[in-house]
Image (cartoon, rainbow, N blue to C red; front, side, top):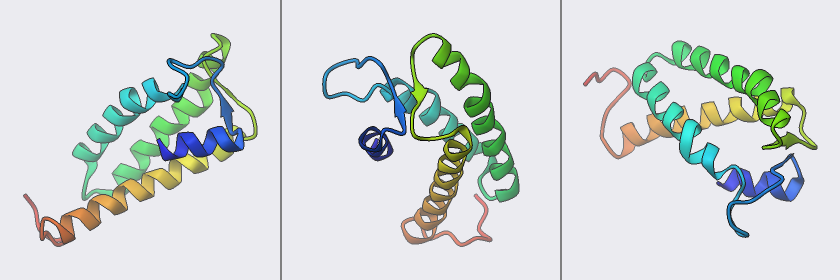
Length: 118
């Protein structure tokens, strides 16, 4: 949601309508496919970083280079000050942040090391 506010402020992309005046237009994407997809990808690829990275790059690229065009065609969203390549970089950064947070959480709050298997 922080990213959505930042993107709105910097005009990275544009959603021509809002669900409610103070609600981000991308909220259905955030709480729908992005949240669920991130959850399942992490669940099935955690501790297999190369697989995790590959799956994320594939899924994010499909969204960026195909699904985004579909959404634009129907007037749901369009990129403004961000190219598709730059959007891919944003997704890649979030991929590393999410994985890093999970590793940190496991080490600090759950007391698991890298070699611990559940």
